[in-house]
Length: 167
Image 1 (tube, rainbow, N blue to C red):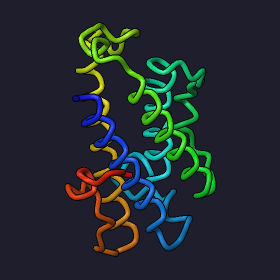
Image 2: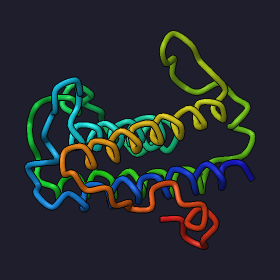
Image 3: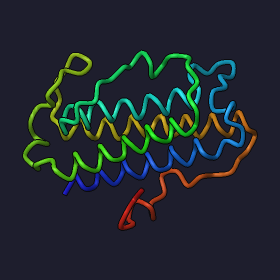
């Protein structure tokens, strides 16, 4: 079922984002904003977690999460452990919501207007998965740029996607 595929992709990429954040040797580097770059890895991690906690957890899963998008992009540096906790919370919201989502909901309009439109829920979930993948790539590039390390954390691993637990 497509919800299982979407859940696997979102969990795999959230797990990879957690590994990216852990791969910074110096915590301060997570918050570095090099010239020509708008957001630090920390900001992107906060945004990715907040986005899924809101659009998947709160809107589809009824978790009650209240999003503060301005805080996601605010300059406040939070400890790495807080970033990790937010990403773990997003993983829980994705897992619980998509496990419980009735298949017929995918064809229904998403409950909120987003960007002036109300796409089908399934289409919006695909959009959320590509949005996360975009930010994961940005964080991977940021980490390599800031730290000078070319090592991979295995982001977007196909074997991980096919594993019993993609996270």
